[in-house]
Length: 77
Image (cartoon, rainbow, N blue to C red; front, side, top):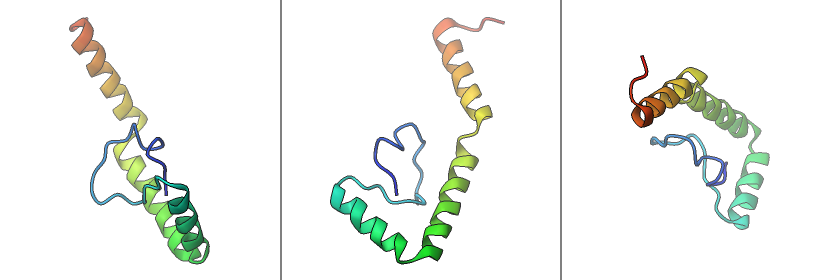
């Protein structure tokens, strides 16, 4: 479970391995659900971590930064 702000910088794909909670009630409902189902909570955590690791590595961040600089400043090579 995440807030919209927490995933603002991530590249969305479907299906997402988490639920986006936009209200206090959604947070409470999801917390209660996960607390009552520890295996589901653990599986959700593993899936979310794997999703982020596969799509948002430091190497990918560097490539995006490099492409952005080249787009703005031109090829400096």
